[in-house]
Amino acid sequence: MIEHRPFETLGKANFGWLNANHHFSFGHYRDAKRQAWGKLRVWNDDEIAAGTGFDPHPHRDMEIITYVREGAITHRDNLGNQGRTEAGDVQVMSAGSGITHAEYNLEPVTTRLFQIWIETDQVGAKPSWGAKAFPREAREAGFEILASGRPGDAGGDALPINADAAVMAATLKAGQTLVQPIAPGRAAYLVPATGAVTVNGLALKARDGAAIRDEREIRVTAEADAELVLVEVAA
Image (cartoon, rainbow, N blue to C red; front, side, top):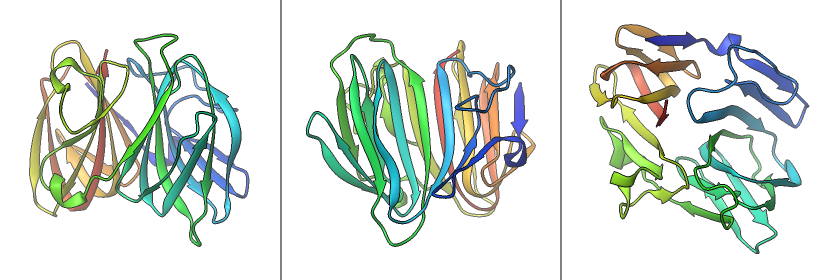
């Protein structure tokens, strides 16, 4: 089963400095049919104006992954962590027992990113933050694991999270196809950051969502050059 969630149907919130599009209920946007997808709780498609951002605010007991699509985001938190994450790269914050952070676009251009929240498997864990560069060239025609807490991914190159889940990305040239298995008992959510694809025959354009469950595999074919982000979680 694949449920198509066109970009136009996402929850909307525009504060001038922030133009947010919500794949799941968040803030003032509420939809009883879009509360979560397995352990995946939030997928926000955010555009942050130059020189603005999120002032310090707290989180706890959530795995928060930021995938930067354009521009860059600068992170600061009360643990003393600070870093700048550029387009194509990823930062991970395990909020654990509690963390206060700020996220600013210090660039001269709009920053566009996906912010993804996954329910933690380790309530009250020690909070942490990390970031890593992931060259897009390494993920052509195949998903690269960017962040993971799945047991089979331990010791790999992915950023660690405290959840049995994985965040992946791939790039496809027009006409290319990739096949990604989905294990029994798992759910997935796929968004083309750019381009246009078909997923098991379902057409998706840029920033649409595909909520996937009870599929042994997905076959993704690019109708135009595409950049894909996929999250796999316990269903």
